[in-house]
Image 1 (cartoon, rainbow, N blue to C red):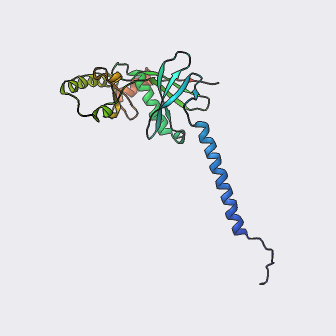
Image 2: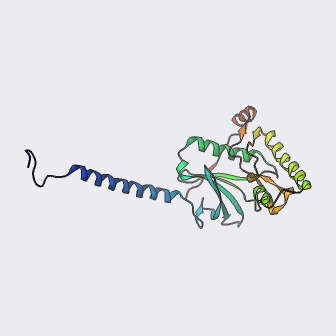
Image 3: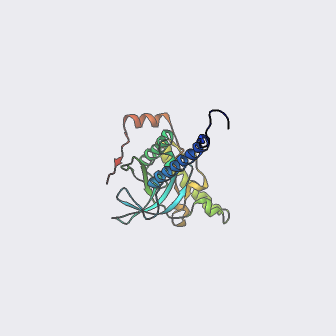
Length: 220
């Protein structure tokens, strides 16, 4: 035995590891609990109005759910920012910009805007029409479109893009995934997902002066 030690001396290093492990487990449990409070599941009712039926799509910034209005029975697509990005101001700005664009660009060739809401936790919801039908990407898996349908689709998308450009909005992501055929009808094709769109200077100036954006806050 060396000077300054006792047979029952504590082992601080080992206890430190144990304490760190306990804190990590506690932290993970807390994080999981917080995530569970913000995650949306089928069967949940949000905004006291919409019952979630299923996930329609999931991207880098958000998820889109199929929901049904509990009083009217109407189907809607609801886009929500992913929980881990709630505090990201850049993502929030893009999300609200998409809502403003859809509110302004009213055209049958563009998915319709049904509202923008914030719940009591500060979580944002973009409510849109639900377009039931395959995407162009899914249709192309079976082969190319006939030439006459290509011309129909070209003209249809041009109508939607012209309406957007008239409002100073450039879509920037006109991809097969973002073109939906309602009831599998090419002549009724709709553009979706303006999440990465660009606004021209004239568009920004017009919104700043004449078209302030507002949204409803829903509480229980």
